[in-house]
Length: 477
Image (cartoon, rainbow, N blue to C red; front, side, top):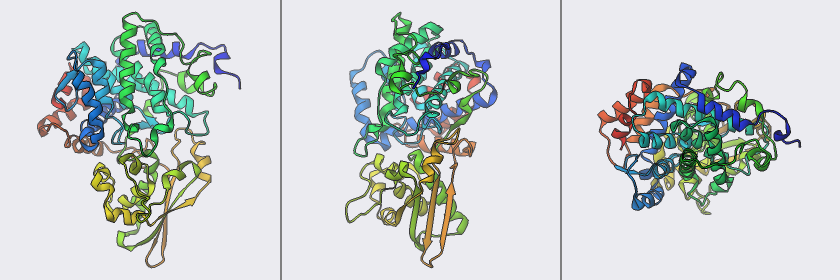
């Protein structure tokens, strides 16, 4: 295969570095600033309760709190400040823990959690950062990260071996940090080169008996903050770490990336408009099945006690997510990570509760006998056509979800969902996103008064009018 670095065109890192360095707030049209503000609100919300609902995170955060250091940036909901890179870690490490973060469904990874903790940490270190400046830093970084993910997605036929949320997320965090520090185009290019030292991460992180999958954005945020600070201090990372012959695309992807979605019309058209927001805290690949089941039950007036058998249809790509549950044999989700990636578990919860919430993934939720009995009724059915569809749709690499239900009278009902609620083709309602924020912060380890919660919502939704973003951070501290 001819390497993209042999094309003779301008190297892409230089192009995106100019975009990051030179883009100002006024470059973003209103629909994009709206999307950025919602990403900030959503990300703040899901960070706050994570160490309560996922207590295995606490020890990672405690390591940094115990080490202490210069009090620069807030650890949300903890009431302490740490050096900016430590705060980026402590906030980012909670970003994916609930599996509730925004994302791009063609790139197939989370976006805001890689970018926003780094931007906030350096904004506090700087002081006096306006809402417009925060929107701009988050916006250029999220736009770049969305495009970076799509450029790889357009040329792949599988979801491995790299976990692109980790591998590419480092560069998104670096972009946000570089913009927040007002680095020049060349300094930004150099910062990417420094971050490239930390580039890695395979899909092995999703192993069901591991709990680190939900913590990856902490490592990403810390890398981005340190890389940008080092570049600001004059350290010289190698230029062109994305498109050079020994750079990311040629070495990690054997030259298989699509240049057009990364750099064409950069700054005039925005991939960020395709950001999606999760209504349910589960693996994105389970969402089409949750949506299909909720609609099937609603459309046909079914009750849980009427259901005899449930079938879930998928290709080989998602078969592992459809592994049967058998309580007698001990084949049940044993960790939160395992349950969030289990289609039978999520479908059973949807049938019984009419939604899926983070409460369903607590230790008590995983042992719920009613849910497990319903999940035992779920059987996998091969749908090989879904594998081809997953990689043939521009703008989406989320496979369809199809469920079938047979009731006790022998009647059969089926429902297929291509674009579940929250998908950018089926966007979440503003009221539901705000309700999600309130629901999340209600589980803060340090209680947040209702008036402060509403003040934060109002401030973020009108972020361009905020003179100092610490007005948003203080109530959540």
